[in-house]
Each structure stands twice: as structure tokens, then as C-alpha cells.
Length: 89
Image 1 (cartoon, rainbow, N blue to C red):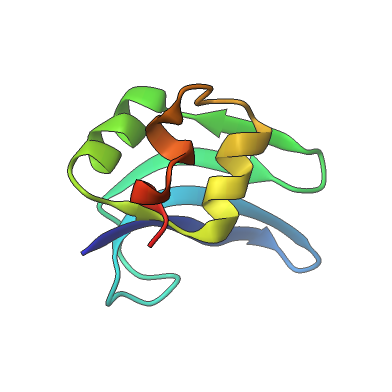
Image 2 (image 1 turned 120 degrees about the vertical axis):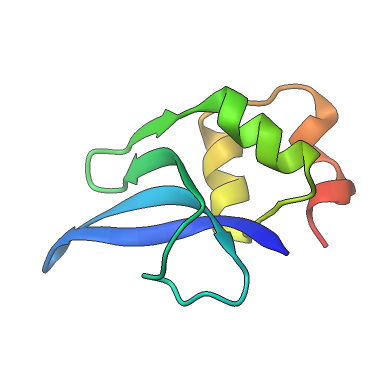
């Protein structure tokens, strides 16, 4: 099973995160299938590759709760594609 989750990057006390599609059995810093976005909590900036995110969601990938909240806050998906219970199991 594939998940969309955060992968920590950056230096000490200055974390930035990549939003990646990764196998659920892999560790947090493990090898990802594809980078689909970027999140900087300090500057509150988000970059998302929407076609890649939609591709993985259509294939059955599950976003983690944090990634789902980032998507909602960035207003990427105003329709019910990602806000429904289908993607949050």
C-alpha cells in the first residue's frame, strides 16, 4: 500500500518537509516512489504537484492525516475528491 506522507529534510531546528508517495512499510527517511510536494512550516509555504497527487490518489494511495490537513489548508481540492471519507481510512 502506498501513502502520501511527510519526509523530513533541512537542518537541525529548521525542518522542512517533502510530501512523498512512499510504501507504507518503508521508514520515514526511506526511498520514496515520487516526490509530489514540499512543505515549509516556518515560512508556511506549500508547493504541490497536483497531477502527481491525483495520480497516486486514483491508484489508491492514502494521505496521512497531516498531509490531508496540509492539502485542505492549501485549498488544493475544493471538490469532494480528497475531503471524503474514501481517502481517510
